[in-house]
Image 1 (cartoon, rainbow, N blue to C red):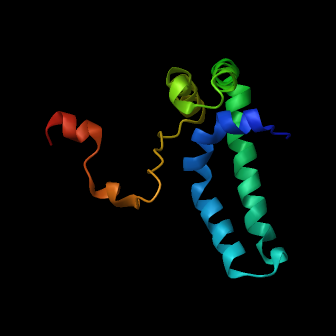
Image 2 (tube, rainbow, N blue to C red):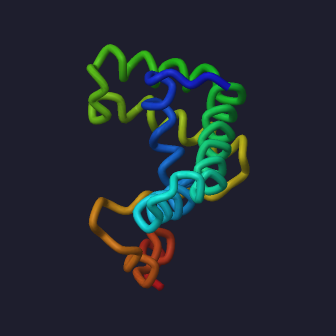
Length: 126
């Protein structure tokens, strides 16, 4: 699958949470080993994950994907200007994959949010 930069930008908000662990393992491998060949398997796993996520987004969510990609191109890739299109794509993607939506933590924040109550629990007063 060929993925141009516009498709990667439009898929990024789906790729980050779904492929982040694989990408971190690949980055760690590259940092730990001076031999690029030792990280080929980890790199292939990242590529496969990215292609899977982007493929689902493009094939099963063609309309919201195209709308988001177009919005990002028109907005000079400013994600903040395309939130409605991003949400539509995410809703479609998570319905298509039947996965629970994943939230990427802000940069520099560890997954300490796992101990925090989720929005449903908090809203219900539990």
